[in-house]
Length: 217
Figure (tube, rainbow, N blue to C red):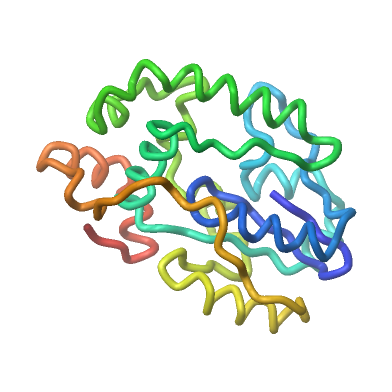
């Protein structure tokens, strides 16, 4: 997540959606951008908290008065990107002042938990669904909803991220375009990684995303 007071913006950072590029750009323009809000430690999420976490942690006037946005991605592509990140050990550690130790420690814990399931993409998709593994089962809709309704003002698409971000930037008077950083190390189209069974597994798990955001395989 990120909260920028100069641009009156709240960014909900969903994993593997290009969010590091957005955070990097905002940090360049706003060195005091807020990187964490106080949430229940048992939830095991900091950088990638939900809009409901932010809503509960900040003043009502701030939440209602700021532009809230996020990026979503095709779940089939997103899950294979996630697997590729772990497989090739390309996890980006937070370098934000004040958040380094907590965010990096949580990232290290997730990396260690996932490591035994990296023999294959199918193994990765059949990890447990509790504890640190819950993040791999949440729909992107879960990150963005309050009382089962989308609570952000702009939903950007990873597949059209530069254009979507530039439109957002114009709306909030943000002066720069989006760079591309932290890309996955992979050489194949995500569709080639799927079997019929793993395709169905992801379709079932992320049915809400596929329906609400109109994604397909």
